[in-house]
Image 1 (cartoon, rainbow, N blue to C red):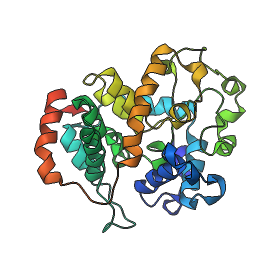
Image 2 (cartoon, rainbow, N blue to C red; image 1 turned 90 degrees about the vertical axis):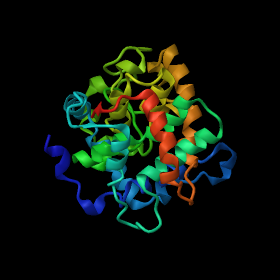
Image 3 (cartoon, helix red, strand yellow; image 1 turned 30 degrees about the vertical axis):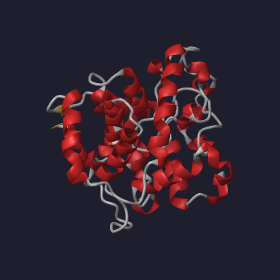
Image 4 (cartoon, rainbow, N blue to C red; image 1 turned 120 degrees about the vertical axis):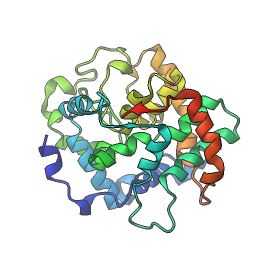
Length: 288
């Protein structure tokens, strides 16, 4: 799999993962702020364009299958949820460490916004953990294989995926079987049977799938599948269960995108509450 890492250089990557999240907030503004829509083909930051160029070039069906084999055995290490949060916190923001929030603070902001709206405890917990799959970066994976909008591989790319023009550099573009509406899949087969581009969503879903309700798992697994839950694409692959799950993803999405403020949460004060919440749903250790 060395070809997947040969081209990218550190100078071409996002300075930190928060730049990708800032791009998401700009690309998918709150509906009431329709005037804030912009032409992202021309105004987007160069690092974000380069990130998606690499993502769309290297996320092939073969790559996704290889990463599933590599990681879904869940044999890399054992950690508690809180230990995974602290591990993720070692992803340091090199561009401006004095002003950016830590990863734990980002997670707590999302969870606290959900808690403030008096949602069920599993919903609050989902906000706390939804990005923990980003520890893939700490296992040595490049950013384009960890974050970014997700999309199906093995079938025709939708024009509603961000920067669809970059898919022309993907080897799968030349595979006729993969470039029909359904590709290797059957109509209405259900998203469980569809390979999405590899990243933190799918990885975390498999880590926690035995411990959370179906609604929470949908939020985790599909929260980066913006082409589906924000743009309405790929409905021909969905079944009735998927359409119900996507509604839960839409309910979660505003907390993911718009809850991050400037004031950091008091992690020390909030930690006992969240440790109790974690213990309610998860065992002491999980396989990662």
